[in-house]
Length: 307
Ligand SMILES: [Zn+2]
Image (tube, rainbow, N blue to C red; front, side):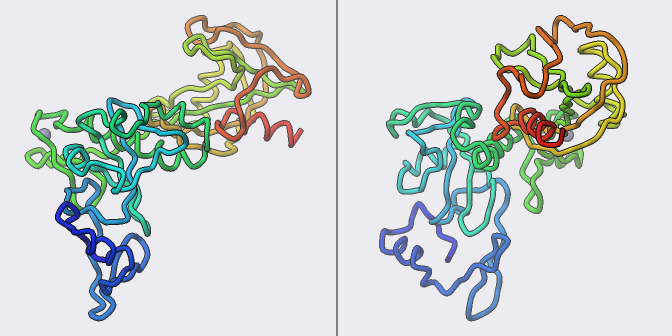
């Protein structure tokens, strides 16, 4: 399919493009190849200009940190949208397989025009968690990266997108600003047939969950587990073991899931972090997060299945 200057594309041209009659074919990894010449179409930059838009691209629309959603629909097609509003916004490439997925940071709220509403990514996650994390969750993190690195943190100069990689560059400083990922640990502490579950003092949540915290500079994740458990509930742990991980876009965390064994100590809660914490028998668990959505839920499920 040929790359189109979409705003000037006539309906007949768009129909041809859909049928793929331009003599191009997909060769994987987002690349197009001219069938007769064998010349590859160039990959697209990570921050797109309007002329980079392709007919089959899909859009996730952000306005002021929220996603525009209509019923179950949060991925839009070009035909749904006012092209002028689209190109006023920042167009950030999220994925570029057979169809491109583009995050649009809109300058104005299109939710009324689309008879849709503004919804947080966290709310959207309740529908199809895995898919939402890979699409809207990822898009949300890229929009935040783009918004927050418009100027160089060292010299204050305006940054520009790098063409070869997902980074914003300050040319005078030769500094590159990549999307930031914040590594965290989340740990389920076991004691025989019981697990330690806690309620956060900071989030108004009904769930009893695992302990968690950000990895500090110079720490290994295992050291973070030991430190966080001691700080938050006053216990020492042993046999700290990594199990699995998850990207978590609130705001941009990589959650590393661990299991640890209780070693010693009495529960002593850090009041500003933990509202409640207690040992629960695996067959008498309180209200816990879903394993479909969170690493905490998966850790609890894992321990339950491997007891
Ligand atoms: Zn600079």
